Picture 1 (tube, protein in one colour):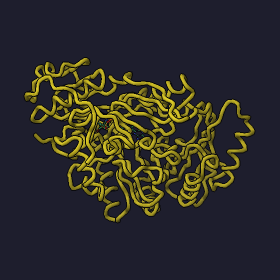
Picture 2 (cartoon, protein in one colour):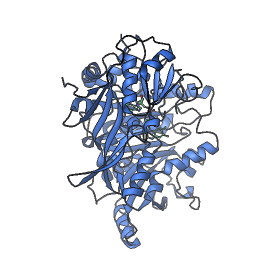
Picture 3 (cartoon, rainbow, N blue to C red):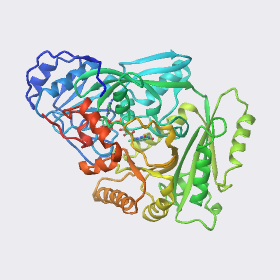
Picture 4 (cartoon, protein in one colour):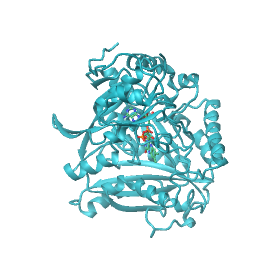
Length: 511
Ligand code: FAD
């Protein structure tokens, strides 16, 4: 067992505190920030999923790490209170909520840290756990011409929120998920201890917190690896009618070394129809470029596949150099030649591409609609079966939003973190990014998600849920498999009273 050597916030009053009296709690906390109990609806009791709503006792806007430690300490002196760190509330199933507990708005700490470090010839940025990745991007690029190496598709997410899961996008095949791209964390444990941890210092907490679903501590600072930022990106979409060719090419690209492949590799499946959201019109990258269905091969089935790739370059690179690098890679791929789409965009525009989708969805009033998403990691050995039954049959008409599918490499993930993965070097992330109007259809779609997971279980597929959500301990045990005992031991060491992240529904608060 690794001892925590962190500072401990001193108790001003070691006596017990009532569970439900906000003013007594507030007095005992002596915060630099604020605590609110009225008018907090719509913030702490809502998330992007729009499926669950749990009302907290109070919402806390801490001014920094010391405040967060005080809140956790105070909760530990009550009989029932729990504490949920809320990143940007972009969970789907209430994971950042605390029913009757204390919700900490991590965004209020976003300015706490922002410092460039150069260690042994490499660059790092220290950022707050409550910072949004989009702000990290903008500040790193504009101030230092540097950028983190591994991203999520959408950057309106917090550093602490994605590191508590994994943080995956089209760079992960090369650099691993975001959890593989941080070297140090500052964490407030479930005992209220402020602890700095890394691979060599308090390593059990470091690896536990990465992918730890917020169970072992609240990440207040992260040290993120940086690399020189490119100026531009050539962003390309290539259409396939055959799944085998799509997966062969995607796997070819993700297993080649740096300089021999694209800098970003993702993919998605779409309905072979003219449906504006789920079908052909969802593929072109600019409005001047039409998807001409006459080019679809006769042999195509109910769905088509799109490989999405991108190559970084600099203003100083000649267009012909970029062209020949792209042609050299594309000529080895088996996509439908006449169904290729491309644009050149700035690096930040590329990384902020989902922000444009958000702006559009907000303007149409659908960003706040329910999002019963399902994210699964499926082993390469099972992906053909998954495609045949789930993608081509159950979901052939689409899900009202993107259906991502692309390969990742297990060797780029550190198995000392709390994330669990399927077996084998290559596995696929499948993300069903559903968007539906409020109403009975939400339940139907949640039921369809269950049906898909049940089918995977029944057929014995090797898979793990990403951004997992289970109701029973038995399901969590199955999810973690042979990592369950390590997860429980970490809980016992760092949050023995199960105060943190109650919305994950893994452990029950004890006295
Ligand atoms: P929240 O939802 O607020 O919190 C998530 C969990 O982490 C909760 O249990 C919470 O208590 C805990 N938590 C929050 N902050 C901290 C902290 N500082 N320390 C410890 N625990 C904390 N994921 C990907 O990997 N790749 C993607 O491309 C991607 N795209 C997305 C696009 C959209 C539009 C959305 C809505 C989500 C996407 N996600 C993606 C999922 C995202 O990684 C999760 O929603 C994640 O939870 C981050 O969201 P958040 O910062 O709002 O955290």
